[in-house]
Image (cartoon, rainbow over all chains, first blue to last red; front, side, top):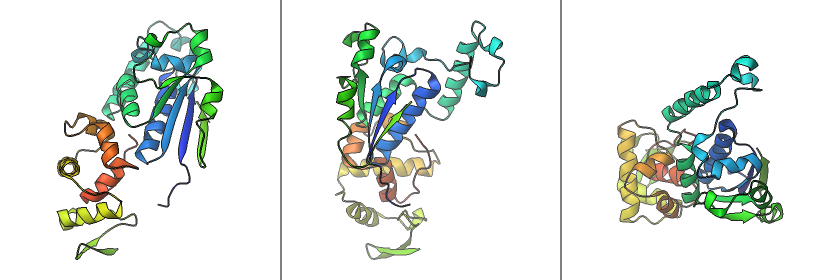
Length: 158
Length: 102
């Protein structure tokens, strides 16, 4: 395989559904494993993935998600979302995919920078103590753009 | 294809991974590491041993596995093998490149 032209991946994670959070994490980790720099900017609902009290309780969307192959009304019944989420977590564990908290530790140890969006942190009235210890800081979107400081940087919104 | 590493002829794939682990020895590992810009130390060999052990047990390698290995932590792993640690470590260990996404 030839050498990649991608040198740095910047992810903006704006959602807290399991499938979106894991997509961001797998891609960010995969980048580091290939020797590519990676950073994640958590904004709006994406902030749930770095809140100590919430990060292990993320769910997969069962309503408004045609890929669940489940009638929308059924997806909205109490407990269905939790059930589907647990099923998915079990499947992920089989593939040795770490839970959210451990995945964040792995990312941080791998040199992936983790940032919280200042505007969203203020909007949700969050304090630094509410967020994971591995967090590298709270940035404005302008600060985050300035992280795109080299050729071959790509930005991805999830 | 064949490649001469440390005075031995070994078969490698297009990316330079050994295709036959039985042809591997420490001198070859040291030489591949040098090509990758890595000078091997005891700490490097400890993790190579671990990786080869997992390979012999046919257990898939992952970064999470490295974390649990007790041999090394992830920060050290990245520091010892800069620029794609598992990719480089498996090449030095003489085993195939891991196919996992995690």
